Image (tube, rainbow, N blue to C red; front, side, top):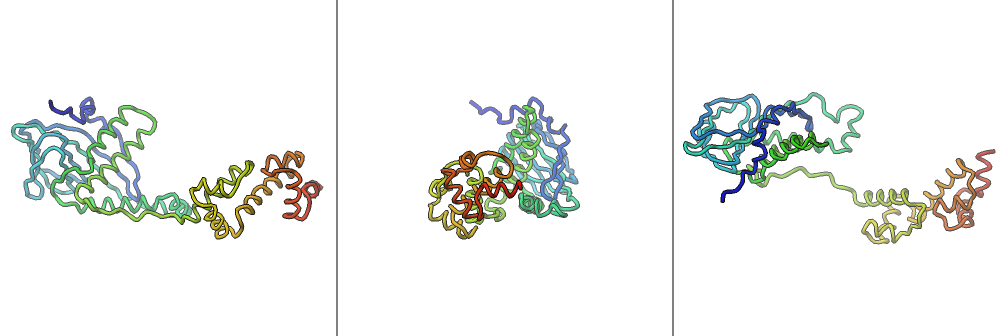
Length: 316
């Protein structure tokens, strides 16, 4: 029994994606999708020599035939792909006795004026990863321009992204544009992978783990200071030892974990004293202190006055 055609859902409307005005920014490039469809060449069909001003990506999901690139004839079979860069003359033929299906993507790359990292928002944009997207897009498009003019096997299953994009359009759910955009980008990246099995990506940004763990601990304290917190409990949350966490606080804040926790709680106490008329007992309970007596002791030690005197000065 023959296997069902993987792209059969697209047969309902094989040119559906062609009707979409798909254009988006990727890094420093504008990507305009001119065609993205499934087509079929009956047995013996010849598409005579022609070229395009944009990149054309050809994927063969079933059938067989041949393509002539730069005067050289290459056989085509199910599971293969090839890329024709702008200006590359090519001729396609389906087998004399067997039809050949093709998934076709025409993409125009437009170098955009001005980087997303330019201007006052540049540093902020870089912090959100745009520098890495720019670098990846640049590397991808450069490598696409350098691909050899010959077919390769679709080792990274780039053509499956056509069905992902089609189903996103068909289902018409929130996020369909993002899914289609990501599918197009995946086609480009996976096509490169078909030619370069060992192509290496960029060195992604690595975290300073001490700073990262410190920020996680600080955020957890800020969110949960009202509850009983211990060095051991927070360290367990971060999956490190309490000794490691204590050392991180000493290195990052020059104070101990307990001192930092106390500072956060006292800051909240000051706010409550200023903005409310709650009793010290209630403030102690809301701020994570075991009792109002202990809060009284800690507060006077930190601020040089009692909580009540602090409140009187503020309202005096």
